[in-house]
Length: 340
Ligand code: DAH
View (cartoon, rainbow, N blue to C red):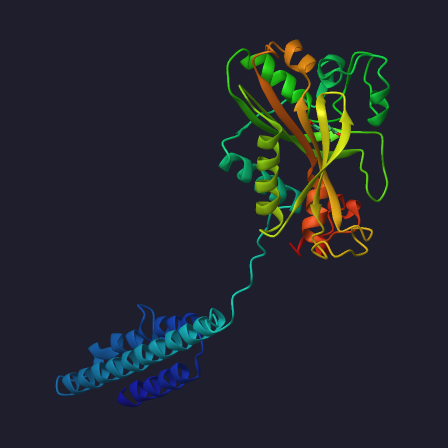
C-alpha cells in the first residue's frame, strides 16, 4: 500500500510538473486528490490494514497529499505568474513614444482680416451693424441716391431676383437701415461687415465677396474726421509708416467723394510691380454722406453731416498677405490656408 501511495505521488508530481494551464492543474487535483481521486481510493482500503500499519500508512498518505498539494499550489502560482507576464507584455504602452500631434484649425484669412478691421473700428468707438444679403432695390440703390434709371447703377453688375429684390451689391444699404432705425438720434457710428454679390468672376473679382462699410453721422462731422479715421485705420492695418492719399472720385451717395490710396505695402511707395510703379494702392471708397441720403432716411441735412466709406475685405487681405489671385481665398486648399 505504501508503494501504491508513493507511485501516486510520483505520477501526480510528474503531471503537475508538465502541466501548462490552470485547467490542467485543476484536472490533476481532481484526478488525484478529489473525492473519487486515486489517493482517496487507496485510503478507502485502509480498513484492511493491521492496527500497527494503519498509523504509518496514514502518515505516508498525509505526506503524499501534502506533497501533491504543495506541488500543485506551486505550479498554480507559476502558471498565474507566467500568464500575468504575458498579459503585461501584451498591454505594454511605450510611454516614451512622442504624442501624435493634433491638427489645430485656424481662422480663414478673410475671417482674420475682417476681425482685425472690426477691432480697429471698435477701438475708435464704432459699433457693428448688420443687414440682409437679399435686399430691396430701395435700400441697395434708391435710398443711396441711385434712382431706377441712374447710370451709376452700371458700376455694380447686379444679380436681380425680381425687379424689386436683389442680392446686395455692397454693404452700403446697411447705412440706410441703420439711419432709419436711429433717426433723429445722434451720433451714428457703425461699421457693417458682410457678404456682397456682383456678376463678376476673374482673378481679381468673385461673384461673392466681402465688404466693410463705415458710417458716422453727427453735428459738425467734417472731411478731416474722415481723413483722420482712415489714416488711423491704414496705420493699424498696414503699419505705422503707411501714408494715405485721397483722390477726388464719384459715388452717388457721397459728395464730395474720394478714393483712398495707401502707400504701397510692398515697396513703401518707391514703386514696384504690385503698385504698377505708382507707389500707391487703392484700398477703399469714401466721402461725405450726400444730403439727399441723409434726408431720405430721416436726418436733417441742415443740422447734421456724416462721412461714409466702404472697403473690400478680399482686397485688404490680398495686400496685407501679398496674395496675387483672389480665387485662392475661396479654393479651400489647405496648402494655401495653412500659411496664415
Ligand atoms: N459702396 C461702394 C462700392 O461698393 C463703396 C463705398 C464708397 C461705400 C463710398 C461708401 C462710400 O460708403 O462712401 O463700391
